[in-house]
Image (cartoon, one colour):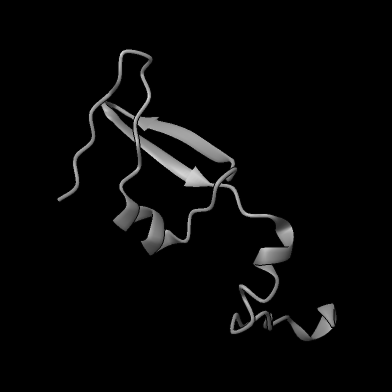
Length: 68
């Protein structure tokens, strides 16, 4: 389990192991979300990185005969 300490300026350092696991780079924009007392940082991905994300998603829709 990784732990961090909040500095006097309310800053934290994300441990290297975590940065490496998710491929976090310098300058990455992060969305900050709170759930009760929990804080989550979510990296904002450029749209070009999302290309092909749902390539195996079946988009076929069963329609009634009169709706074709």
